[in-house]
Image 1 (cartoon, helix red, strand yellow):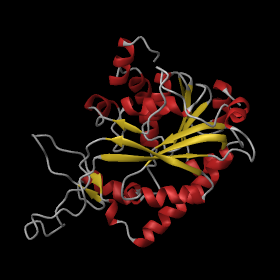
Image 2 (cartoon, rainbow, N blue to C red):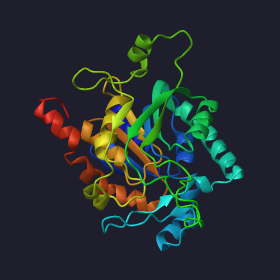
Image 3 (cartoon, rainbow, N blue to C red):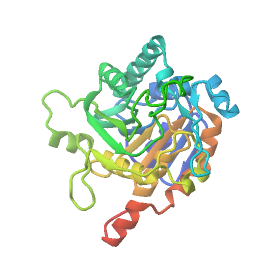
Image 4 (cartoon, one colour):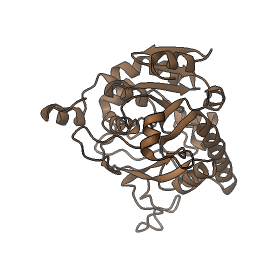
Length: 317
């Protein structure tokens, strides 16, 4: 099950739109994953945007109104107002338990849909990654390590809430300088070697860089450029310069289907289009789904830092 015909089948009867060699679908990812035939997907690259407290409807409404809730409104710097950031430390023990169960169930569905040896790249943060990655392993995925996105964020570094003047020399948490992405894999069948998995399923390993060097688990990254945010106004938009490297590495032979079950505005699918592979993105929020139809081709057409460097070296994509 490969190619555009397979992608069309994965749209099922949901609202969908073909963009280049990829598809975007409006559906709930749990419902969608239950319908995906076994051993269909070659990789997943995703940044989970719901099932977590800050993306519940009441919290999104508070963010929209600027009234806080779980969303922290950072101060402005150099005359520029920063976007709200979710305060994950606001999650209670009960909410953390619900979060864990969410990812256990999601992993169980994912294991069925993925081909043996297929990798999952999933964004997290320093506060939640231990819970999320353990839940994914409990759900049946094999933990293979982390990809560290080096990026200076505005997370952490705050003085104690409502006691800033009393404790001016204290930070509640360190200022974030990285974003952890979990690297997990559907286990290979018992006794199967990586080479056999590559031959039979086109999965199991990671694609080397265009210059032949191995994919690295530490990636220096920029914040998402303003030109990309102007195309896709999504609160968790990741930069194309980073996502294209991840999507490229996800398909060891450069063939197959990369899925993003939590698509948002489609940045992963845009990265797939940019590096010449097939993607299928699933998003339940109608606003973000409709945004993706316009955003994906625009984001995919952008020239980013990695592209410029490779052009100078006469390397592909």
